[in-house]
Image (tube, rainbow, N blue to C red; front, side):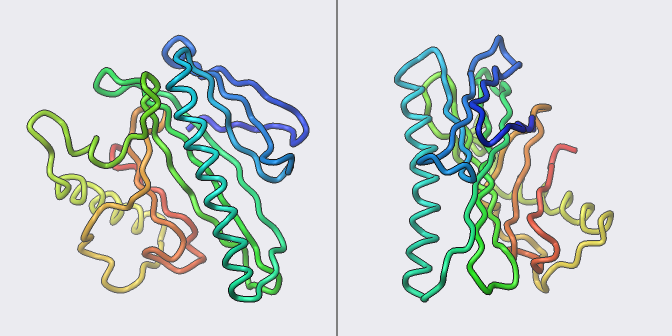
Length: 212
């Protein structure tokens, strides 16, 4: 995906290069916090633009609320919390799709390490709707989830062998698709396994490109 690097104090405007600049991305700090970086998306249709940005802010708010509620319930002290993003724009099945990856990280005082989650959001730029897994399974007469699960398992096995990643027992055979997926700038479909989903913390977040 196209990475966006920016000064924490600057407002950075990026015009997504694909498809005649279908979207303009403005980087902002959530509630003025320079560690909480999130995108504001501008598109031609004001209704679609509102849907997209409401969904993004709701996700940031959900993340922060969960962190501080967990701290309150368990007597933790939040030492650090931050977000950032990557973004790509592409076209699939005559739909211009904006794929957003939000990196959400937090650290509680005294914890062994930070916790990081990669949240993917895919938007149809023409109407602002979120694209979920049903979109993947609704091609022609319908593609069964097992088709994608089989492709994902094959690519995951290859990645594990190539990168010498240690997985938990009983990962294979895969039972279902991860909830988080996105398309990169080459229209490759990626699925995301979060920390501890299928491997120890040291393995990090595992991103599998099933079209590689």
